[in-house]
Image 1: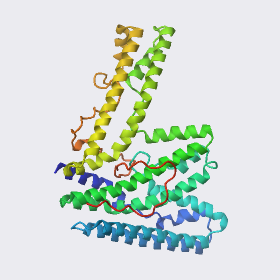
Image 2: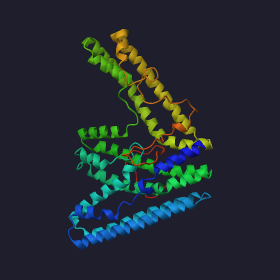
Image 3: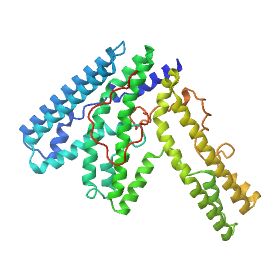
Length: 422
């Protein structure tokens, strides 16, 4: 029962505001589009408003039909039936967008097409991309490169990214619409295998977006000038960071030594070298930890259902690898603190460590946040990251990892994957 309640709570949080994803274009956008495109004629404005009303109405009807179909499948439909229904909805989205584009092409002058393309991107980002919950799923690479002054240098790459992302976001939208009701109904009916299949499809859609974003980040880093590439890496690293790497006991102690006027410059230099050695030794450990947490982030949501089915081996293995990784980092932290204390004297070191409030040194000498990971085979529903979303962040699911993807951009795929057989 706890697993059912956990997943039911997650599903209640997943729905986008107002009960589900909104259409990318809506009647309320008419004034914004007319203003941005500089359309002054009353007739053009009326045509645009009618086009948007038609798009919004048909999209809402298709979404309601999809939601109704998915919740009416009480006996667990075949994987093919589910996949066909999602594909049909995605094809409807593409057709509606194509019709709107054809009419806009007739209305707009060639010099206005670039403005329209830019506005389309803004609407897509506002109503789809920002609802991602995986680290890296919500990256808006156009905005980031523009802010870095790299808009011209990255134009072709960003264009390809937007084309891929449009398909991937459409694919996720179908799951976002039917997902909460579908998973809750299956779980409450005891159909855990079917719930897991549906969740896996939803997961694949989100991970595909995340992986596409990170792949294009790597591509941009190879094409931008060195300074802009470094700035991009810094922005993305901070935006996708899964754990705090600063503020560890070692760092805080070293900073306290550097600021202490009673310690000689020679000793401070020795402490700085010790800290540098620690950072070099733990760099790979941190990279491994980040890779583990990127895989665990989505797996933690699947764990309650997998545990009920006895299929949570991957989750338990990753949790054990995380615990081993933290133990290695903690051991390096303890050894480095001892080395620093030997340089400045145990009594002096003890006084400085008393001021290290940010870290519970006994339990977490490495300064890693949160409780230690449980041993292999030991976990509960509290392992799931199902905490209430921040007010500024629309709710959405955490979703799991997929097998390793090739480097570089992903190919466009407007269709959802076939759910795995039971």
